[in-house]
Length: 155
Image (cartoon, rainbow, N blue to C red; front, side, top):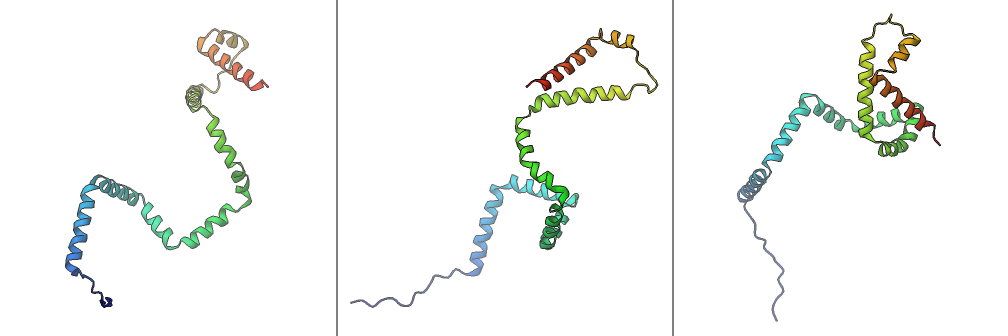
């Protein structure tokens, strides 16, 4: 019968060869991911320019204390209602027609701009209101407001 092998001699790679293999592997990875690495460098530069990297670094060094302050702050009674309503707000956002809201907001902003150009001493009479109804833009706005009120009043 043959003797069992008790002494196993591992093939050892010299450290210099292992370092060279590792460098080749890194070079290949850098070459394959050049664009992503360059974008990452640009992102890091931007974060550094605005001080975000310093903030993140400071946070990572004292994260326990920072998290403790954060938890203490959001545990205050003044934020309770906000956190209770947050899920409902998320669902509400899903129900909103953002395109219509964006269009309406643009119109409201235009109206506010024109309102701010109005002379503060200017007065409006009943006859001015009657004449204004003949203006197509005013008539359209009043009609839209009436439809809004009608829609809000429906059950």
